[in-house]
Amino acid sequence: MTPFVTTGGAFLFTILYADLMFDLQVLGHGGRELPEGVLASISNYYRRVTVEARPLNRLVVAVMVGTLAAIVLQLAGDDVPGWVGLTSLVLAGLPILLAAVHTFPTAVRLGLRAEPLEVQSRLARSICRDHLLCLVAITSLLAVELGFGR
Image (tube, rainbow, N blue to C red; front, side):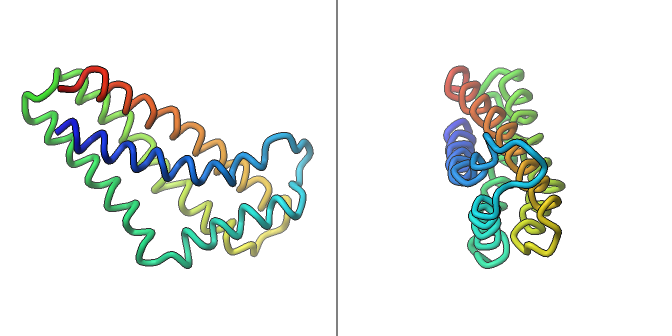
């Protein structure tokens, strides 16, 4: 099952990389509101990938579910030591849960640009934080699977 887990993890890593190319624009801007150009760039990206990309954006959800399923199958079998499967479940499960309950809904809100600039700035910074945390978790997932999976 390790190849399926690492393939799913690598796909999610790639998606995070693409998102972070926009998210990282929030860095280096002190104050409460981000510059309009930064907000426009980030919010346009999230409008395209959350609202306008249907049904293709569902591919990300399918990969998330498939990755979790592969980890559960990995745990059920004897392909890897038990700690590898449990660690992988936490390292994949937590960022996927964060994406489902916070990051995606926040990205949709930002993509709609219906809120005051101060709120949009807070949303953009929140998405960036989420994605940085997810990047650490998914990178760690890949390290565990590639380093200790069979």
